Length: 322
Image 1: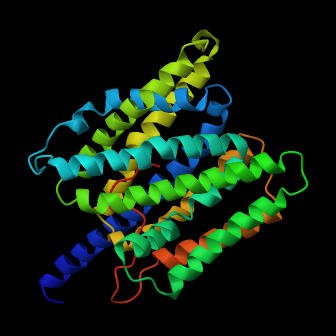
Image 2 (image 1 turned 90 degrees about the vertical axis):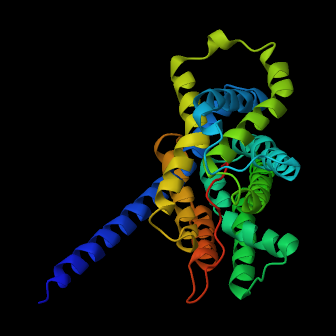
């Protein structure tokens, strides 16, 4: 054994440990997304949607002040960057929050998590539509599986008393996925000049400004004294998880794992959302959920699992608003 072999083995061991740590961080980030999406359901039972979204942005804005400062590697924000930031916030914060929160209030947390896992397929489809990126058979199959999963969830509620509202809720959550996919595509240009943390902080501030008129309108007659301490604590958890914690976990994981490998971890979203729905919200898992989850898992694998010699599409370019 040469003197250099132990050092090489040690380096390989450190790299492997770092890679597995990255996998755990990415999975934790996506699991946190599924968790706070599911826990948004009891919040929508207490707060009107616009007020809830406004409070989320307001709480996060206070805590994210350090992220908003310009770093040494951040370029000056020119007019095209300002337009891109506004559009990212419009779709990824303002419209996403309205669609997601309203949708979650009408459908189950489990169904919401399964539908949100179609994000990689949505990003790939919109990248093909707007950016003319190449789309292969795997992406086309993933889109078809996402549609199939949505159809299964909707048909499973057919004939029930809340069939119409559940179907509308599923469509609104799907609309949130489309908004998030547009957000991710817009972010591909901004991440070349601004850090992901600063982008997240700035679009959160823009989202707060966009939501303020609607939030104040619903806050006018709202009885804040009737809200329990537990709900306030849940609101703070939701705001910080959605805006900061999931972003930190994702960025930390990407330090150790190639971005082309990251998309597969979106499958942790429906798993976490289903667990929260069953364990804490009293939801029941049925055959339809199992079939839809199977479609989601296969769709994520088709889009996100890297192929040899190809980076492959991935759902996030460093930051996201989910």
